[in-house]
Each structure stands twice: as C-alpha cells, then as structure tokens.
Length: 259
Ligand code: GLP
Image 1 (cartoon, rainbow, N blue to C red):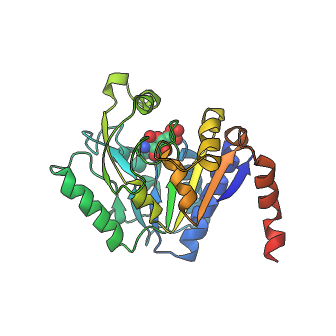
Image 2 (cartoon, helix red, strand yellow):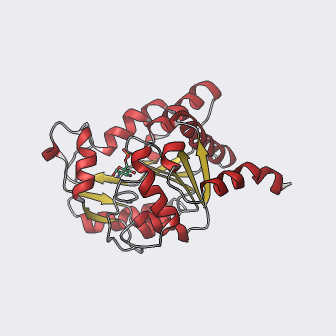
C-alpha cells in the first residue's frame, strides 16, 4: 500500500483528483469505479474544475458505482444515483450511456446483482476504483462479517452505518436498512484502488485497516491483499498510524528511489 498524507482535506481532494486525472489522461477510455459519501465530494469538485478549466475529457470514460440504497428511486434526493449526478455527472462530459449506478429498485435483485457483475466484466473490468471508508471499516456497503470473497449482493446495514448516514436524511428512521453493493471480491478484482479518508473521526479505523489483521470484521482490511492500493489521508485521519513517520519518509523519498 502506498500511503500519502495530505495536510488537509483540500490537499487530499487535489491529490486524489490528480490520480484520477492521470488515469484518464493515460487511458481516455478508462473504466472508473466511483464512490459516494461526504469524503469524495472535494475530489469530484476538483475533477469538475479540471474538466472546465483544463479540458479533462471524460467522453470515453465508463463508470460503475459501488452501491445504492434498496428502495430508493433514482430520483430520490438521498439516492446515490441522485448524489452522483448532482456532485459529478451533471458537470462533466461523461456519456450518460456509460454511467452505471446499481439500481435500488430492481424487481429481481439476485439476477440484477449477477448482471451488474457481468456488466463490469463486459466493460473490461475496473481500471481505478475510488473508495471511502465507513466508521466500522466497511468499503462500499460491505459491513463487518461480509465474506472477503463476496460479489455484488444485498447487504443489511449495520446500526452504526445507519446512524452515520442519518445526517443526510430528514429523520434517522428514513435511512434504508438494506443496500445493493459490490462485494469485497468484486473490489479486489479491480486493477488499482484509491482510498480516501479524512478527519479525526476516521483515525482509528484507518489505523486498523492498514496496520491491523486481515479480517471480515473490518472489510477494508482485505485491501492488504491487493497489489495496487493508494491511500490518501489528511493529517487527522493519519494520526493513529503507528508507522506514520515511515509512510511519510517513504513517500517523500519515492522520486529519489525511482531514479
Ligand atoms: C457510505 C458508503 C461508503 C462510504 C461511507 C463513508 O456508507 N456506502 O462507500 O465510504 O459511506 O462515508 P463518508 O465519506 O461520508 O464518511
């Protein structure tokens, strides 16, 4: 894992967007895996700026989102479909036909989950997957106890996740109890992963998934098995890493080593 520590959220967002820009520039028809939550909003703002001011071109890009609440129509303001359009898709030149956000209102979820996996495969697999992390260590909506080999499936949300995500809804009881999510195995199949986390609130879970054991109780810990993971943190989120100084040194000296 490569750990990059940014001084604050703005720098984190610029760094993360820069990694996505480099991917899209190197391969204009990249397949991007995208995430929701509060954390990526700054990254998406920066990508929009790069599109508007620097001509970053998304016209050949394909996107797959990680997850969606079960029961929310795409037009629902708290749906991830709505979130992605508001915060990114409506402001860049991605072809609407190339956008994939799992449906929260499929009539047969079992076959729908299989077809989502097939669509990812059909697109040639995901080149770069953006991830946030939940307070309980989840990636996408893979709650503690989910198999580390899981594929796209319906997940029962944990109480902590419901509590965390209640801030986006009028009342806590409005938060859906189920979600459709790419599995941990689906995520491990992508070519490269970019995980972002900010704030002191995430410091414990960040230290746990990077430096703790691999366990289905912290599904993000499975990323230790992936050969190409970049983690971008701000200082508060990185503050409980035992080997913080080592990560900083390694990153700062990387250009010298490459020479
Ligand atoms: C939700 C999403 C995750 C996201 C997490 C953290 O549970 N399913 O993909 O990483 O929230 O959200 P935030 O960035 O708001 O802390």
